[in-house]
Structures are given as structure tokens and as C-alpha cells.
Image 1 (cartoon, one colour):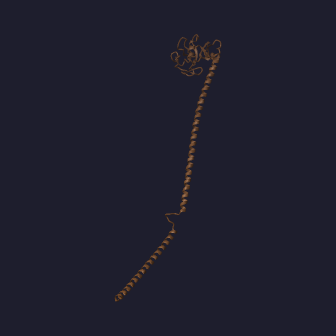
Image 2 (cartoon, helix red, strand yellow; image 1 turned 120 degrees about the vertical axis):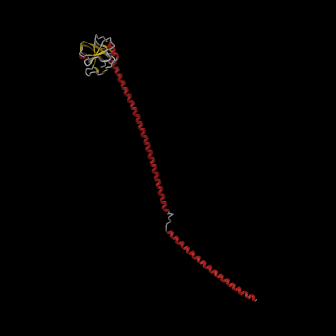
Image 3 (cartoon, rainbow, N blue to C red; image 1 turned 180 degrees about the vertical axis):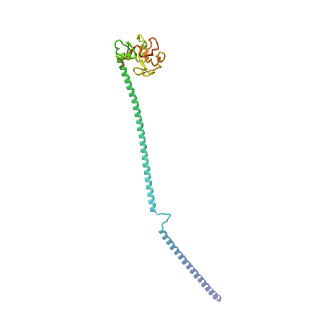
Length: 276
């Protein structure tokens, strides 16, 4: 019993001590919870304050959506404008290229027309020349049908006669002109052969002289008689400054003419051209 009594106070004391320890623990726990609550409250207030500050200041990394949309719309509009400009340039380039091709085609057509015109002009000129030749041939045939005056000898389209009067070269020419003729002009081999065979009964004057310009022989129609003509007696004129008129050398010779003084007495060999 005594043991129990001694034991119970001990237990009571022990129980009281445990109670005190529990009270201390509860108090400590309450203090800890209060501190945590204060920390939490402080932390929440700090968070709210920070959130308020952040809400007042714009985020430099994430700009507002409104300006971004405006920039995007502006870029789209610029892209559309640039595309429209490129399309316009392409259309203009195509138009210019088409116009260039049209101009080239027109130039080529003009060139072709010009060439055709030149060809036609040449053909027209040829036709005109042929017509002229045919007309001359017709006229020559018509005139050559005509007979020579009495006492004249016909060869081709010309009539020939030797003057009856002897005289100088100039005198003989005057007699030929009086009959509507002139001293003979040799313009073909056939005519030269005819003159060589013609029976004139001696030396006769032909229609060439270098009296106007020494060494330059001309026929009375103005054409040049070459000093290298093979019909010269010695292959060239014989005399110098004194022999300035042309005469037939002799009928039998192949050397058909020579030069002699224009004052010598000869008969003139007249030629009447039916083509005039």
C-alpha cells in the first residue's frame, strides 16, 4: 500500500510532468504555426505587392498584342503592294517586249518592201531600156527601109558619097554639110571594111582631126579616135604638128588611114545617117 502511495505520487508527478511537457510542446507548436502564418502572410503580401508592381510595369520581353497585330498588318500590306508593283513591272516588261517584237517585224516588213521596191524599180528600168531598144530598132528598121538620095550608096542605115570637088579638109566638110551629111565617122569594123573597098578614085578625107588639141584625135561627132587604133598606116599617126587631118591611105592596103596636112587637096567622103 505504501508502495502504491509512493508510486502514485510519482505517477502523478510523472503525469504532471508529461502534461507540462505537452503544454510546452503545444505552446511551441502554436508559436511555430504563428510564425509560419506570419511568414505566409508576409510572403503573400510580398507576392501581392510584387504582382501589383509587375502589373504596373510592361513586360519588355512580351509586348502587348495590339502593336504586334498592327505591325503584322502593315507588313502584309507592304508585301501586297510590293507584289502588285512586281506584277505591274512584269506586265510593262511584257508589253515593252511585245512592242519591240512588233517594231522588229515592221522594220523587217519595211526592209522587204524596200527590197521589193528596188527589185521592181530595177525591173521597170530594164523594161524601159528594153522598150527604148525595141523602139530604136523599130525606128531603125523603119528608117533603114528608106532609100538613099540619088547618087548615094547605101550601107546599113547610112548613105555614102564622095564629093566631086577637091579641096582642103575643112572645105570638103562644108560640102558634105551642105548636102545634110558630114565627113564619115567610122564606128564599126564592118563600116571600115566598106570604106576600104569603096571606089573613090584616089585619096579621100575622113572625118577626124587633132587640130583643136595636138595628139588628141576626135571624130566630127565628138568621139575619140585612139592613136593606138590598128587602122593607122604605121600603127600610129605619121606626121607631127603639121599633119592634123585624117585621110584614107589607099584602097588596096590593109592600113586604111594616115594623117596629113589639113590644107592638102583631097575629095571628101560624106556620110548621111538615116537614123537622124
